[in-house]
Length: 640
Image (tube, rainbow, N blue to C red):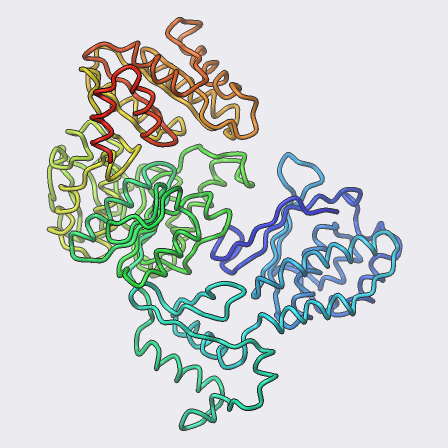
């Protein structure tokens, strides 16, 4: 057996609410072999680890793991249970695990094991593989020295009883806490402006030092170590739980714009907002990191900033699958939509699987969840919410039956009616502003941005913002090359309207093309692409959507991601040909610069050009510079 991939899921994830180690394991010659088929294996394993007799299988299944061994189970499952038991024997109990085959890849399994000490989990997993491999091949295994190594790891990294008591008290009170790093004994208690830091000692340091008194001796009143964690926590946090308002935004399309819009409204209302998006981390409007910042560490950067009193976190599929959530719970969760994208990656093989990933964010909501009433997969998330979590629906259609039923029952939400943004706040329906008053709506043409604004309005209402504060945010947020790069950025190049937009799936291309067509162009040209890690059928569908909606199409290569160069381009063109047939309106241009220049050459004044860019505006600017230096300089000045 050998490990193909490993990652630590540090926060709530699709497998569990607790931290887990996820491993993809190749079973090699043990693939398909039951433990009862391996002569002497079960007895040898139970002799080596007699504590497995008490190891329980998941709730609802009879007997302990020893019984399952005798009945027959597979090697991956044995590695899972041994990993958990080794952590327990090393002094850090762990009990939850699950093993599933990797879809479409015989011989590979995905194993998830709970952990409480990160530095222990991976060595325990490796030791489990070594044990199972050796015993499966009839070899003896000397466990004692390897188990001592695990115990030594625990001694080096596990915190001492004093700090452990404080952390336990924080957990009991609901104060979020985070070890700054596995090699650091510094803990962050709370978030943003409300955080405090706790310097801990390791267990081995406490054992070596006889000079320091126990906390119960230091603090008046005595009462034991736990009563003393509580007292220390009180002195650090007072009566606060250390939390700042947190809104988490997920969905397939629209996350970045919605997150920035919410943060913009919060700043106008006087909050010091921190926001993490696809383009960077911004603290009170200033960039502190640039790049795709939708994952675990970027979210932690926001929550660790001592200047932040309001957090907005774009929470993408990839970050959830790679590391889990960066928070135990949020105040408001927003799920914009669930559309086919990134399928076939990381164990997410169908759209229902993708919905399960997005639902992790909804489940984390402690105050309210804002859901798309027009998306059945979003609506279905209601049953996964915490009992006390309020539901707010948003809809572009005031007659949506899910929305109407919700509002009739006294629920709150937001919807568009007669070209106006309306919020339902209990028994009242209040028109906030006209759609044409929102810059991101582009006079009502950008319907997807109106939907984003509805979601933002509902989330701000759920977070306690006033109607006037919501209106101020919606009416002043501009989506351009400065504030929201690659999200509906519109430029004029000698009479040609150019829309630069980050479209990366069929739904996004359909929405973007529909906006462009609503501008009533003489001719509509699209320059499109998609990453190569998308499934063949997804690339074909992008081609069908684009072939149907654009008068002329240029397809270029963005990121091959394991495919031969040009393969994704050919599949998109194949999909377009299914709609329009073999046509000289379909163009294959691998290089992005050449594709941009070709697309512009196909346009005349009065035309609209859509450029689906996945990298940066600089790519577009530099590509047109050789054709039109004046326009390139003007756009550069608009985006600087």
